[in-house]
Length: 275
Length: 275
View 1 (cartoon, each protein chain N blue to C red):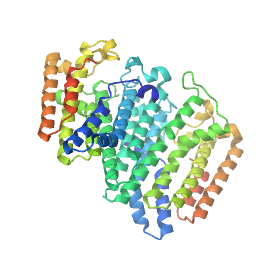
View 2 (cartoon, each protein chain N blue to C red):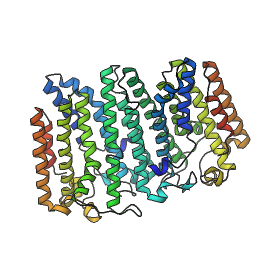
View 3 (spheres, chains in turn blue, purple):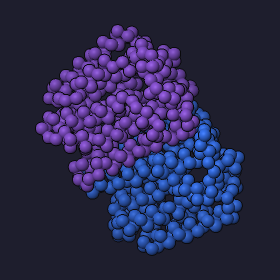
View 4 (cartoon, chains in turn blue, brown):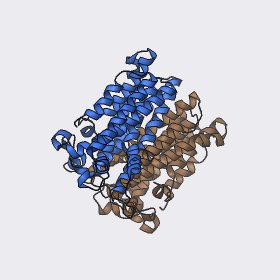
């Protein structure tokens, strides 16, 4: 578990959690420090869930990746069995954190913690990340007797579940823990939906253009396999335009809700990143 | 997920949850029906977690079992990738249930739900089930560069985590949801600790004595591998005596706390079962 959690990584999801909490506090004129303290456990939980999903995704039975964040993947070092268990343990640990932290006996806080546990568990589960990965496996022809192909809608639906759902849940969790109103939470959710899609599109582009040295993982994997990607469907330039549109919509959602702070710069980073 | 959840099985863990809730209600002279309603979501959650652990445990990278509950294991039918994801999805679904059900906006109920989510996530995680499975993998020589051997204490510690923790959590969850006092919850926990150990010892004995037809899974697996077992350490008769002692202690814990109902008969079934 430590090998993979402390391998580095962009920490996009927990940063979104904290930035969303901060944005809610700014809008209310309340303490950002308190909002960050309240949302930090959820930020940790989403990163643990993200890390578990990478460990399982890298397994030979799934994407069969041997390099991640510039290091051999967990199963290469400790074997597939330990990698499966480490992922399982990280998911359980995420929900332990959500159930117990912040550790204050306050009815309103308890309500927020349960809501965040609901949001994150649904985003991680069969209706979200795990369901998206199953669609991905099928589209890659890796499910005996259940091969499918994806069109544009199918591809978007797959990404909305596989990577989008947890990115949305990460931001929503921060907004909920900071005491955001329903309108604010919905705006953060719309923002994160577009950020998540843009993030995935850029991921696909970088896989075509990037080098393993920059990415810290094997480049060209998607094209080498039979995986559906944005560049394959829309070309690199077309994909860049779709990603840019997402960012425009994401920033608009923030503006309309009067939310400021780190969220807009994160949106810009998502499309400008090189790795 | 459906293939494995609805494959049958003994349903010991959810039955323990419901029986514990019922015992608390009987002791309080309150409604068993209400206690069962309150604890049913937790009962479902522990069964989903148990099912996920069986799916992952059966994978080639772990125990490499091809038969479970009289049917081909999930990975044999849908491939390893889907089996990994189905297990992951079941764990997430378990925590969705715990976060959302029973769905009433009551501060005391919210406190109970968070406590149960904590108890179950810790029992499922690295300090419990997943940690025990990792010890088991190591002892079976399946972790590159990390082989170990287990003595009696090591074997008990492994089982306490691998199977005992979730069995305890199952019973405790029922007691908590039914509004049990701390003394009652502790008694239920002691009861379930001994039940869990007895259950595992009998499992080991059945693996030596049983047939695949009776067990619904491959018999003789333990001896065929290098896995440490009770019969290997204490013989079949010695193991039976240890299990019988557990049941005596378990019933004593109930008697001392004045808890009646289905729990004692469950204890008797645990040592008398043939599959």
